[in-house]
Length: 72
Image 1 (spheres, rainbow, N blue to C red):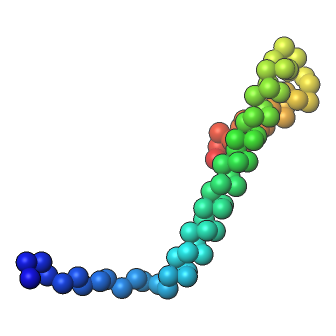
Image 2 (cartoon, rainbow, N blue to C red):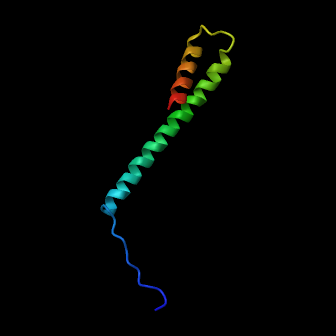
C-alpha cells in the first residue's frame, strides 16, 4: 500500500456532549446578536427622533441602549 492506514485519534469527550455544547453555544450566540441588533434598531430611530431635545426620556433610553451595546 502506498499510504499508511488511517489511525483515528479518539475524541476527548462523547459525541453527544459536543452536539449539546454546539447547540447551546450557538443558541446563546444568536440570542446575544438578536438582542444587540434589536437594541440598536430601536436606539437609532429614538436618537434621530430626539436629537434636538436631549431632555426627553427617549434620548436617555437610546443613549443607554447604545452604551450597553458598545460595551459588549
